[in-house]
Length: 115
Length: 111
Image (cartoon, rainbow over all chains, first blue to last red; front, side, top):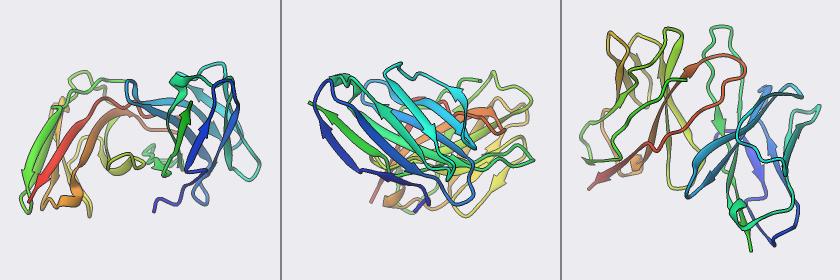
């Protein structure tokens, strides 16, 4: 158990719909990262938040957005869903260390199926 | 970030050491080598990382060559539960470091 929780575990929805994925980081971790894993693209970084502020962006579609709340949990919002958005979505959290060595701890993921 | 090259698959007998190689010839001086693994659609799991010295923890050992262009992850006594995809990732540390995953190596531990 990494200490990172994600809900829901599974999500089935239809094209055109909107869903929200939730992530609770490990206690004390300020950084939250979102990754998408699909069969054809592998594991891809989407976006990072650090203490409530967006810090880095990866291959995140404009239909997707995220935020990190004051209690440090994060939500990933996916809208106008397409069949190709079906994937595993992982959240990871980490704590910055002065030595610069950072370890990311991943949650169990949310499996999204768009029909 | 520097790119890495790993063999797509490897086999190992249970109880034997598993040695997983990784080439990262374009690594720069301030970049670390990280190893993660993913067991069948579970969240990736951190294993170990290092800068230039060899590292060991309760899970594995990391051997980095002197020129830092390659490294080897060693699982000293592989078990069936070590069957997973192993990712070698190179990048700088810091408070905003994203992990760039390649295809990794599928390690299959056989009984």
